[in-house]
Image (cartoon, rainbow, N blue to C red; front, side, top):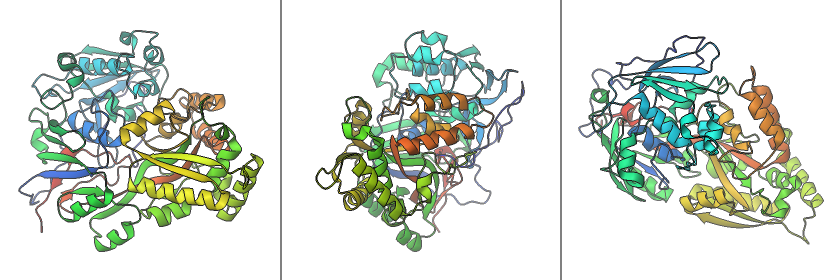
Length: 543
């Protein structure tokens, strides 16, 4: 979820200059704007998020909520550039291993207590601790924090993690190796502060309305799981006077077409465009239908665990299934929302990424189909021994439409018999995480605007390597890329290995395809990650 976010590398012992200043409102409403009497924003999501705990949030919709409730060291502006959050700026040591953050002294928790560097230290150590068992603990390791691997593995105590509160407004972070894009990682929820006394008072119930103490522009005022979550203005937020929207409501509506009907009836301010309907809607509602590149890749993954299906351990089978997918039909006919075919894993618009040359991408679909047939036959499958595939995906009309189309392609080209199974979101996540699948739908959205956010999923120890793909060369290349002067050398080789071994099938690169109420202004269409902050939005009066 970002667009062209600049690469923010601080020079030796220099202060990082950020867009904006401590007192400047990023969402300044233009002078003379007539605002709507009611400053509300209501939007749709398809599933309930597993958690709104910053240390455990793992999905895109949950992250949207957490960015409203909590504020990290830095935020993003509408172009995806870093702007001050709780941190005003930072300096970097000569060896690029120690970052010192200067925190604002007017940041407060929703209970009026000051936000301090100790709140960040506690939150980061908590996220890395085996006790929390966060699905995103691996992100702390990706940040190259000192001793992160050992802490996450339980080999060292959390206090050994390379983060220390020097005083209330000074946070020191120590890395195990220089990481040029480290500041970009600090807009992710895993790095947001958490108030220790709040967690200790309420335990696992601390994230419920009335219990949660947060430091963002909004507080959670109502939460009915599977139905709605309401957040309202936090009057203790340091920039509350420049926040315009009074309330933001997230509604869980599983059916995309029902959501669209409710949007057109004026009940919603934003909803996803159902698969295939963008051309019609963009013609009928040109000021409301939008499609912009979004930093996400859609793919299918194979279960490569030792106890996984034997047939999918053969790269020829995996390659055959990949080649038999006509990606142009998927993006042009099934989805029709500005998505692009994917023959490599990293999203094509990722900052600094040089798309690799993948042989399959230069073939016609007829040539791919012929190669797919030959590969599957070489693996021992054919009319007398058809390949069967169990494909699971989370409940969504769009996911179903893609799955049906692909199953038909596999049947027509290869004679493959596919069983489709849709699962509720949490059940689906559990099944993927435990290996209870043969082939599963995957979607990954960037945590920061750099290719490693995609390719790190291929690392053997990644928390989201649900295929359990292991390749020592890939692990080596990923490690080397973190300190490489030109990591595209490593990224290209990794993409080539993925294309050859096919642990996953890249299918398409996302576009954000939405209907947005014309009254809602300042939506970050140029933010490639599509990270949005309700505090930066406002609602104008209807014409």
